[in-house]
Structures are given as C-alpha cells and as structure tokens.
Length: 213
Image 1 (tube, helix red, strand yellow):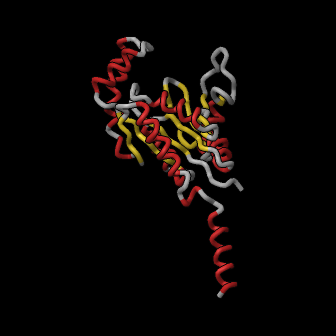
Image 2 (cartoon, rainbow, N blue to C red):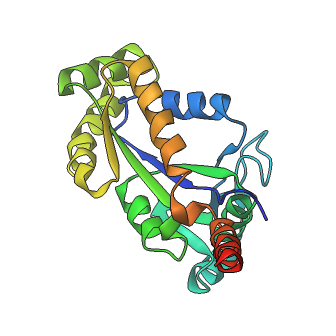
Image 3 (cartoon, one colour):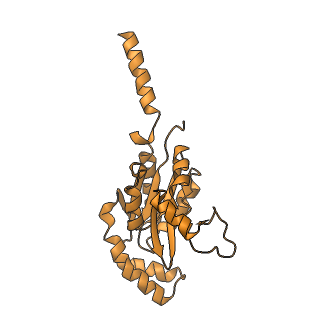
C-alpha cells in the first residue's frame, strides 16, 4: 500500500493569470505530480504520440466510456470530444502520485462530483487586475488581437466561479503564489482521507492500549 493516496489537483484561471507557468513549476518541484493526459476524438497531429499527448479514441468508444462512468469530465469542443479518462488517474493516485488538471470550472465541477471527488484539491488563480490580465496576454505574443479580445470576453465568466474552489490565490507575485500553491498541496497531502494506512495504525494503537489495560 502506498504511504499516501494521491490528489486530483485542479488548477483553473482565466487565460493570462499564470496557470500554465505555475503548472510547469509544480511538475518541476515534485516528480510525483503528473499532468493529466486527456482523451480526444480528433485525429492526431504530426508528432503527437498516443498516450503521451492525448489518448486518441473513436467517437463510439469515447461515448461508451462516458456512459460507463469512465470519464471524470468531458466536453464537446470545436467539433470533437475531449475528456479525462478515469482509469489512469485512479491508478496514479493509488500509487501515491498526484494528478494535475488544467481545466475550466465546468470540468472542475464534473471531477468534484465524480466518485474520485473526495480526493480533489481545487485551486483558482486570479489576476491582480483586469488591466494586468490584458497586458500579460498582449506581451506573451502568442495570440492575435482578435483572439485576445475573445479571451478577455471569456475571462469574467471564468472568474465568476472563483467561490466554487477550495483555495483562491491572486497571482500578483509569481514567486509568492508559487510558494503558496506548494504549501497548499503539502498540507492537502496530509488530509486524513489521503492516508489509507492510518486506520490500521490506529487499530494497532488500540490493541496495544488494550494489552496494557
């Protein structure tokens, strides 16, 4: 039995709040933090590897897994289905490894309502201001002005769900936010439900107590 059961770490934020950077730092911090590999019904792109970049599935197989409760969350995006297969996640947390999900509030709700929901740790990342959010999107140079405008329009809908998360961090200082995030995870790993060996240990203490009585 693993000394602890892993966490399903849900990290959400509007684009530009720093979620991707914080995710990379978490994985560099601890090799036991794995990034969740999503399943999709779209065709592989050049260089993509099945089981590494995505689990590439036929539509019927994907829908069957949804109906069988084998997708922790799923969504229809731009003509294709995307989701998080339950099997690999459950295997990882049973081995004491944490699984990191970079998903929106809708996906977060589905995972929290799944039968693995008791092992979730949900964290929302807020920007220090809307002006700073726009500045970050513009300075990273990845998107056109049109895409940035769409991301900004979507940002408030995402921010409006902040109260549905276990923890909320305002990313006005990357180093401080990174440190707080790691402290939260370290504490959550010690939750009673994450320590399956505790029951047996308490039982042994009880037996020892009875022998001394």
